[in-house]
Length: 70
Image 1 (cartoon, rainbow, N blue to C red):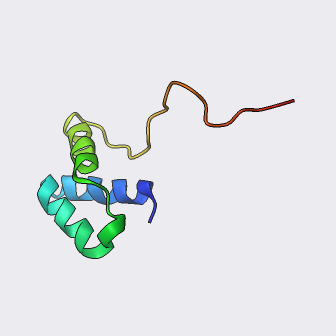
Image 2 (image 1 turned 90 degrees about the horizontal axis):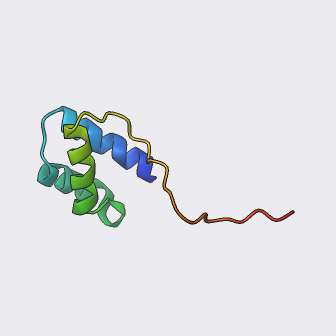
């Protein structure tokens, strides 16, 4: 499962009134080692509490991962 799909699960659990501990427990139960960390879950819950509802990762500033050469 990719990160975007995990964020959708996290949003769902937030919207039905679950907390970060319950969300982490559920994700670890079904996805074991691939589940996001508790820190990641808390980060997304904080954003959702501020009113964020999209699950897309924000654009990052800084150095590019790839370089285009002519």
